[in-house]
Structure formats: C-alpha cells, structure tokens
Length: 123
Ligand SMILES: [Zn+2]
Ligand SMILES: [Zn+2]
Image (cartoon, rainbow, N blue to C red; front, side):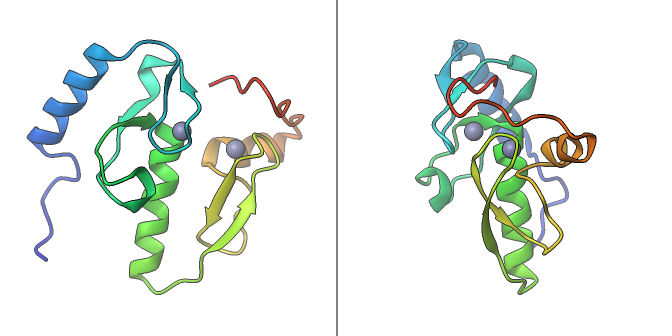
C-alpha cells in the first residue's frame, strides 16, 4: 500500500472537526468506553477492529497506544497485554520496557504518582 504523505489527511481533519462540534463532555471514548471530558485531547481514531471499524472520537492516549501497537505489529514485534499502574487500563505493551499505557502515565510512574482510584477516572 502506498504511504500517504500525511498521517492526518484533509478528510480526517474535516471529520474530526465535525465530530468535535457534536461532542459533549462525558461522551464515551470509542476505544476504552470511558467518558471524554477534555476537548483539547480528543483524537479521531482510524477505523480498525479495536474501535469497531468506525472512525470516532477517542482519548489522545487511547489513539496513541493504538498507533504504537499497529507500528509494532508491522515490525513483527511481540505485543504483551499489561495493566497500567496509574489508570488500571489494560494496554498493549509494544516493547518490554513499557511500564504504562501512555507516555504520560509512564512519566507519572517515574515521578512516583499514586495510582488513580479504580472508579472515577479523571479523563
Ligand atoms: Zn479512551
Ligand atoms: Zn494509564
């Protein structure tokens, strides 16, 4: 398949803007199902089995980890399912040193932040 010059094409941007216009705080993420509250952190996912083959809004960290998994699979890497020590979400680790679901939470682990309560995730 030919590589596109940009990861985010014009169509993608247009659809993202349209969905964000309709978004209301607390709408569920298409990937993890938890509410989305921060408008600046909404991403439009690409249609794939992980989100039911629909391009819908999702958390930026959900979007980021899905992208990482796809890249790792292409490179033939082993994917391990782990639980994030900060937010308790199950994530796919794409390299063996990965310690959390996202870069942000890995930084929190390194800072020694306390895990979030299992209920009431702040995103
Ligand atoms: Zn999510
Ligand atoms: Zn996490």
